Image 1 (cartoon, one colour):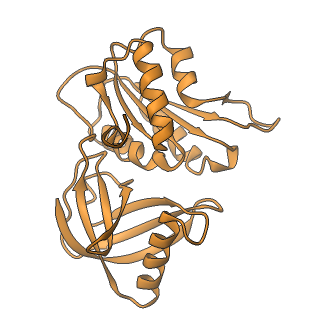
Image 2 (cartoon, one colour; image 1 turned 45 degrees about the vertical axis):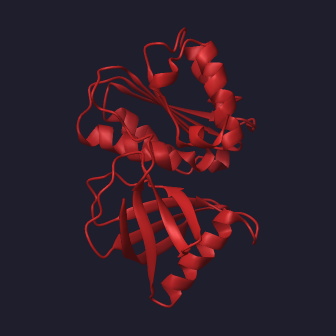
Length: 237
């Protein structure tokens, strides 16, 4: 883990509730794809967010913060960042946390599963896999409640087009009549597409209650627990 100071370069909306934050560390930052950072509000108050940028961007940290409600965990962190940006102050961050980073030591196909802003966790890995020209099959499933939440739809569609081994499958829980793609719960789409999950390495991010359900359903569908990765596992039974 690195403890360092960073400038808040930009804060821009991705949707009505999700904001992209770009931080510029005062020194080169080191992390693995799929790790997270903590924004240090005080010694006893640290807010964790997945890093959306790929590790090769050592001078930049990208976050996707979904914030709604003035007193919410994420909104308080976002306001802290906004204040620092307005006053041109540095923020304190801890980078390189987590145990669910991308593993590259095997040839197993990969499933990246993200719910909502859990997308940022999977995006870091997706971009890294493209950068190193990974030849392993990679299936990226992104589940959202509303179609409008697919803020990186075009980007990820292009990601899949750049490599014949990559697939991007967005899933909308509450679709409008104009939506022509997959619908329902994102992990159900995975199980509909794949007979058995036994051959796969599976990386997951989303609400803790969601990840607990996904883990149990995937194991029942053949997934090997040791080949499933989510930092949420440390907080759920």
